Length: 417
Ligand code: UD1
Image (tube, rainbow, N blue to C red; front, side):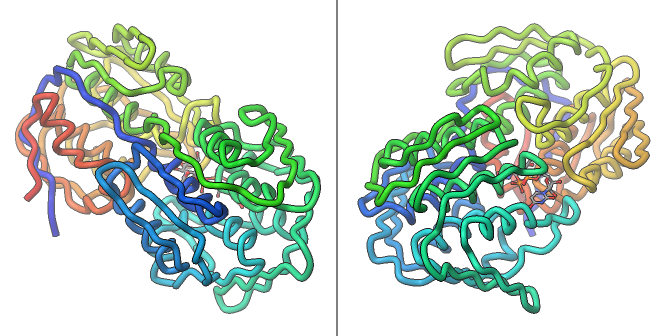
């Protein structure tokens, strides 16, 4: 099993391009299943989750070609409607294929995604919405069998929580349903807007995306189109937190600063100078960071749960006490125990984590237990004195394209062994 070995501390400096968003690429790949022409997706990151999506599309009978960061999908000969259990287990977000498969094939068979490293991951909101649209769903021994006896029908759907995945599945099912679908309390994440932009470019009629009420007029068919995936705002937040905690000065290129509005004030509060240009962000860190009073994770446009772990690492070395409240996932502090090994001072009580900033961290062997928590450990290793060896890096490879190369570009001493 590979490890990342980091010799710290480093002070990050220089410029870095941010890759395309994983959380956009996956639903976009699912959406290509609906198109009766070739779809060309540019700026797709090279990630294991994207590979898993490719395998799902190929399993369904699609032709998928990757050339560099461009993925071309031709779904015209797709003929299957199941996702094998192994692929469902490999990538919990495979569930985002459900809406697209049911729309295209009028049936779908897949295994229940089950829990994951972030805690239980229910899909009740996805299933309730699809049932409202006329899908019959049988749950048996961890298997979901879905069918549409007549047509998918537009419906009025109120989500009790603005779930990202449920909103995506509703969009994917509703775009070709009969009639109008209205989604209230929809998720507003930039990745939802990216999906809707792609579908609209293919001929869909989706209105109100980015607001909490989305209206979808069903259309008869979708054509293919060419689309550029938005930049990964969470990867960007991770690189910024690494620059901040190492006293660095970096410029991120190929970002959409507006997507980072919920996180940039946190860097400013910690004493960093942040300046934004059209598609660039520059961050210059002080010698010692100040504490961040309180961070509460919320649905967009609130502070993203995916940035909680890397930003927590940043506060480990800040002067004073920072408080985190994790409101989205039950079990999202797995990185804390590993940060303690590096010398951090953090106490967790339920959904609250209290970070007392320390003067220094020192390198140690640590183990990534999930994607963003793993990235946070790499960030910590860059700031810690001595050698940090991060194991479990297959988690990190799900969401960061060659993380070691990105940090090397910024001057870090890091290698994959
Ligand atoms: C997506 C992102 C993930 C991010 C999360 C929250 C992808 C591939 N993943 O995950 O990186 O952390 O949004 O921003 O885009 N819930 C239910 N019932 C449901 C669905 C969700 O109770 O049917 C709960 C979840 O348990 C969780 C919360 O709602 O507590 C948020 O989940 P959701 O927004 O659906 O996240 P994902 O789409 O799974």
